[in-house]
Length: 500
Image (cartoon, rainbow, N blue to C red; front, side, top):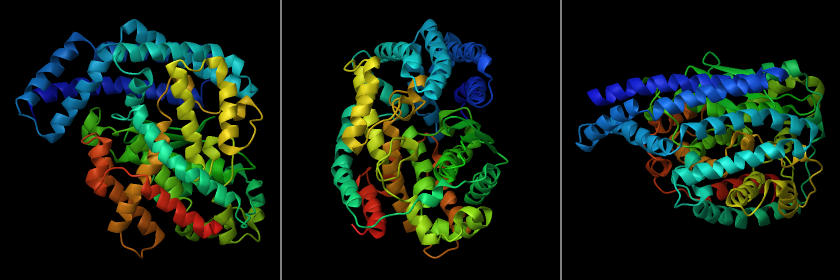
């Protein structure tokens, strides 16, 4: 290994340990912290974030990074080493533009905001959260201005989650999606096929929910010896190391399939990506996920393409009936399959079916772009949100908790995150098409899960940030990202269910 890169990697590992520490604090904040402990936790998380920023942007680290860059410019590095230097340099240039005091303020503001968002959601009172969100929005605008004053604020923030994506590109893709989705949803709504979903209301025993979900995750490939499944208000995945990946779900007696099982499969998709990253490059960009869109494709692939497939439930439904015989007595596999793939307008994004889901994402993109751009104020958000829901789905938002307060992202300052969900669906369709072409046609389900995960490990997980998302798509699938694969997937699957 090149000596300059070896020194850089040593510095990066120390920084990663600080990052993992803050990730653990964040996990614990959402899972375990008592009500009176939020302020102390916010102070601690802000302190650790500040330490990370100061060390990353220090003159000592800069010297080490410049020496590695010089070696790269001289052509002395291999592909993996160049990836480490190139991606670290990109992050460093951005971070160097942010003063320490600014990072301290932003970190503390977001850490504090989580508690107020949780309370506001519990009480369905946007006013409790609004002042904190106003401060976050202002700070994120300042961040964008500091990083790149010549670009739009929203595009600068978007680049943090999906490098290379711009709002114009996202809008073009989403316009194409809407052109297909809106009439397709209308056709399904007008279909004569009606789905009975009454049995999905349970009641589902929560103890059995946990056992069944863990069993499913183990069989599809999530390593519980290198992972953990906890409980939180909003399901998420938190990675500390490929050998320590935390996911959370939530439980409701009247909604096991969406609230627990599909959330668990979704988050385990994120988790399996993290567990599959090359551990030998831990702490460096070569051992990190390439983008949030690619991350989301892993979770959406397992949740929808696999977890809602007929093949999946041919395998798991008999065991589900044994676990919950009192709920599923007299329910056939076909009835269950149609019920979990029912297309209907809904208020909650994480509960949305895979046909309408992208519409939830698209209107969030439209709202947050206008908010960051100054075309909407924070106080405008509930009205704007409710109007979008009415326009897109023809339904009325009954309360803030089911509307503007349902997502955690803005309380964390994650503006630009939402578009990656829709991109994830598009990536999933295209990568899934490539995977199916490579895998045997007739194999048993457990062997299929194993082979599919192996394919993802080889073609996606092991690559880290070696290639950009766009490069990875083209290398693995043979062409640039296209909406057509997703459209074809929905058309084929739901025409079969609804006869449209």
